[in-house]
Every structure is written in structure tokens, then in C-alpha cells.
Image 1 (cartoon, rainbow, N blue to C red):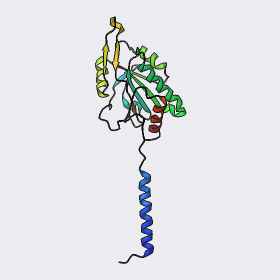
Image 2: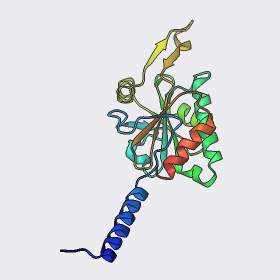
Image 3: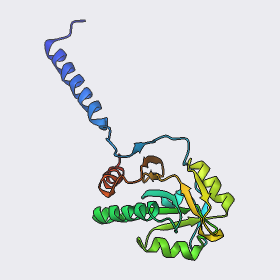
Length: 201
């Protein structure tokens, strides 16, 4: 069967349109500032209690970009700096800041009571979430996130400090872990990553 020149021309136009449509469907990869851990087989569960005694899981934070950080309230530098950066990100994003939630998990349940945790995270923002549990529950959560922590003895029993992993873990609005942000990345870099996730990256 002979194909007319007109039909050949129309077929070429259709093929070009199809290829253009397929190209448009492919998203340009985002150059995240943090470490892309999309699809990681860890940081998939978190079962602890908030400062009001309510059991919480990662599913509670779906619909928002959740930034999960393990630390302790008597931490002198890393923890307050990280939470302050999350607060700064929420402020920088304007209305989109309401789509971000900071989740602080204590690695020091011995000293970090519910009341202490609530007051501590409240100083960074009213919608920060503080999570705690028994030492065994906290250890299980840390293992799930591949977070290290250990007590460092002080001069008295109550004056110990804690060594711990300083990364933050960022979850997209679908509840999937996406990024590991290094300590000290800065609010500007973190805000770019968070905004990209809010926009569907």
C-alpha cells in the first residue's frame, strides 16, 4: 500500500507531538542541597509519644514537609542551632511555612520529661512537635533512623552530655523520607530543599 506524502507528513507531525509530550512529562531532577536518600530502607517508622502524652507516628505528619531531628534539651550547640534553622526556614517560606513541621526526638528521656520537652520546642515555635519514650523505645527509633547516640559522663551523675548524630531527616508531604541534611547546612539551603518538596519534587 502506498502512503501519500500528506499522510507521511501528518504521521511525522504526530510522532513529533508524541515525543514532545513525553519529554514534557519527565521532571527535571532537582539538585538538592542535602543528601538525597529517596527510597532508603530506613527512617520508615517512628512510634513515640508527644509532650501531651499522645502516641505519634510518621503518618501524623503527612501533608506537610516534616523535618525530624534527634537531640536533647541540654545540648549546648547542635540541637538549638538546628531547631533555630528550622524555625528560620518556616519564617522564610512565608505562607508555605505552615506546610513545614519540626519534629524533635529526645535521646535523653532520663532528663527530658514531657514538660521539659514541651517548653523547649515551644521556644522555637508553637507548632514544633516534641517526641519521647522509654530509653528502649528511643533506642529503637534511633536504630530505625541509623542515628547514633551515647552518654558522656560528667563530673556528677546528672551533668552528663550526649554524643549523637547531627543529621536532620526530611520527609515529603506524602510521608516518604527524602533527604538527610547535614548539621550546619544553613537555613537558606534547607529552605530551598523544603520548598522543592512542597512544590512536588
